[in-house]
Image 1 (cartoon, helix red, strand yellow):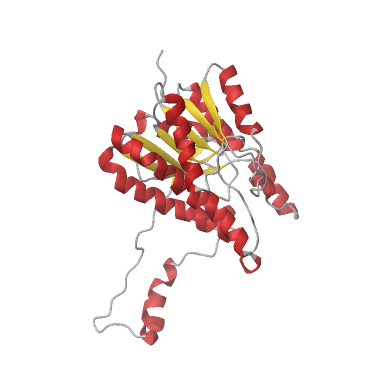
Image 2 (image 1 turned 30 degrees about the vertical axis):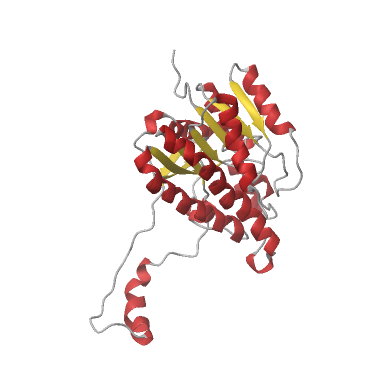
Length: 304
C-alpha cells in the first residue's frame, strides 16, 4: 500500500524533540526519508549535543523508517548548506524543508540585550532563510518542492517579553510569502504553521500567578503530535495547490489566519494636514483599531 510521502526526502530542523520530533516521526511513517537536524542545544540556544538527533533517527529506524542525523546549526549559512547536502548525499534528493528550529531568549523589550535579540533572529529568521535558500536550487532543477515554515501567534497577535521572537516569527511570514511568490513558477509552494502545543519552549513561560498556572495547564493538554498531520499534508502532493497560507493548529482545531489587507480608507480632496488627520482621519478609523491584545486574549476558549 503506497504512502503519502513515498519517495520523498524531508529535512526537519529542530527535530530532536517536541514538535520537530513528531514531524520527523510522522513524515517517516508516511514513507519519507528524513534528515533529523538538531544541534542539541538548550531552549535558550546554549550547548551542543549529538544525542537528541541520533535518538530520533534510532526511533524512526526501529519503527521501520529511514532517517539520518545532522547536528549543524541553521543559524550559519555554510552549516545550513550542509544540512541540505546531508539529504542529497544520503538520499539523492530533497523534496521538503520544515523550518522548525527555534530558541527563546524572553525579556521585556526595555531590558533586552543586543545579544538576546541577535540570537533569536539568527536561529528563527536567518535560519529559516538559510536552509530554505540552500534547498532552492534543488527545488528549481526538479521543478517541485515544499517549504513548511513555523510562525507563532506571538508574532501574528502579540505577547509580553518577546520582541525578538515576535519580530522573527512575523518576519518568517513575510519570508514564506516571498518564497511562495518567487518559486511558484517552479511548482514550489511555501506555507506557515502556527502551532499551539505543550513543548520544551513553552515550558519556559513564567507561571507565577494562579491565572498563569491555569493557562499552562490548558497548554499541557495540547499535544505536539496534533500538529504533525498538517505538516505531512503540506509536504505531500495533496497540497499541490496550497501555497502562501498561514495555518494554525490547536489540539483538534485547525485555523486559517488572515493576512494584512486595508481595513478602512479616508479621503480629502485637498490633502491632509496633521490637524485634519487628528480631526477627521483618526476618528473615522478608530472603530477599526486593533486592541493591544495578546495571543491568549484572542484565543480565550479552552482547547477543543
